[in-house]
Image (cartoon, rainbow, N blue to C red):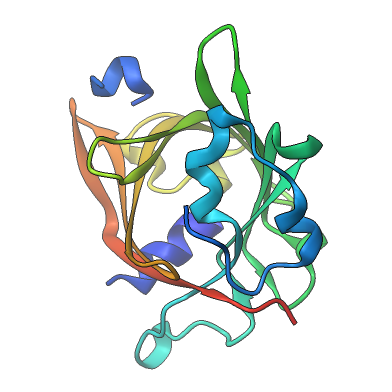
Length: 202
């Protein structure tokens, strides 16, 4: 999974298994125009385009690499998320997904597909929530299409459970932790920690 491996190199289960707004900077006017549904309002903080924080040496990402971008859709009833693209080319994203409040489950659900290359193709299904301490948590399953695209295949299965926690250090910078569910507990995926900052849209 390219974007997860990329984030892990930058270093610094669904809820049943796991047990449990500031104005955006630099976003396009159309992204800010939507009034988010009250059920989605906690995600206002994620709005915009985010790049990895600087990393030293060979881990330094390209200066125009976008690690996450979020924008409202359907008048604030949903949010589109794209990850892993260069410059102003969101159509070339490695991951493309949608977030929405599901009145049947009463959670913000997340569905996405990633991996455009041959022998790739991953399906993401999960949810976003805000924890009591203000951290935004994303917990999701990834099902991989092929063994060639599955990280650490010998560690178990084509379907994996991941958790990311986003802590706002400032309104425009986030410290993140990436974990996966393995051996009955959450463990860091790769180095686990990474960070990203909001940047102006070109």
